[in-house]
Length: 374
Image (cartoon, rainbow, N blue to C red; front, top):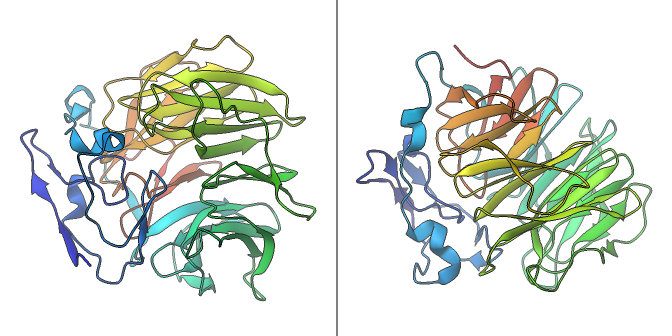
């Protein structure tokens, strides 16, 4: 097992190294990351790795093989300050959710779900002995998470009350679940195969048959997002020529199926009117029910834009060392909200409340006001 990941300087003037989870270079403020206690890694392409080495001759890893130019020179950082730390000391934080003034995070490496107030303070372990917990969502009653499991025949969706009182309970058995989304009625689960839908009222997971499997959609989705009335899955690339995103309404009627021209797709979000995608060096939006291919560019010349979220006024996303935002209609230029994000492509996730953006960083949780840090 590789004990540490030592970052190297590149010709582009930023300290970076290939991200062990796949999906691009790691932020230059990482320094040396101790990985001695890490569990086997599930990379961004869904492959389980017992070490942090990988074959850069694999065509599916083009994003890792090609260094990316630091695009920050075109962004005014003179009035932007560093992100604020909410919690540090986690081993490999993945999914994040916010509910009732509390942050919930999956620590993938040690198999725990932890909570901490949004203002910071004492961390509470609310679930332990999980097998690679991944995606996390919450409603007003429970926090839910996917437990990837230890092999191809294992995996589950779990839940526990927001208070953390009582043992975790099974929601559904699902093989190798990863990303997770929620609306008022269902959970939407990305798996190693066909995506699944689980009712919040209980019952077995139901394979979702609406994901296209022909033409440009030969691979299972790797991302999911949901809001009241709409849910989406996004896939690729795994060798595909594009990164498709498919959205549906609550009756599973297709709202929009479209291709995002930039690879690899690193994040999707949806509101009542639009879907959003981050990938390549762009962040884009697409009106639901509009023809495929009609993307609006919210920002280009981005550096590995990753997880994305929206409050229906702005889209917020992480890229290498920056938190960004742009109006959902693309009416004005994207701006930076914070530096020193600790963003880890393939692992970091993002969540919002009414005033603040939160995300999982290299070793914990960071945050910034939606108005930015001066």
